[in-house]
Image (cartoon, rainbow, N blue to C red; front, side):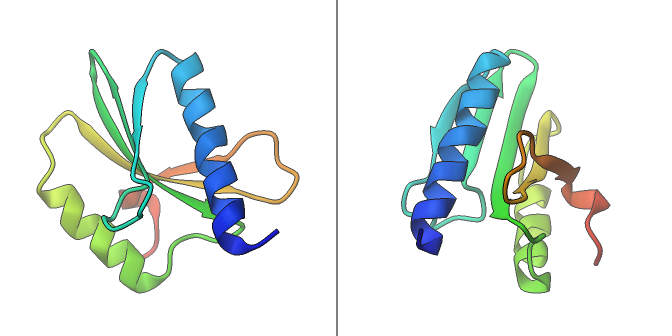
Length: 99
């Protein structure tokens, strides 16, 4: 499976989990922005970068941190990492990732 196809599959898997938890989700199909998925519920929003097997590279982390500064206070910026064969992702907020 090529990388783009794998990423799309994992984004859809992430959306399914979020919808099951009561979120409305928007997927950035072209991946032009820093986030792959925006998930919204009455309490706030989650801006999510989905990765496979690795955490974001330093330049991606910097881009996520810069984008987080422009978000409202009720927004959470997260990275969801799906390891091969995992049933659930590893989830970290942007603040938990190394500088």
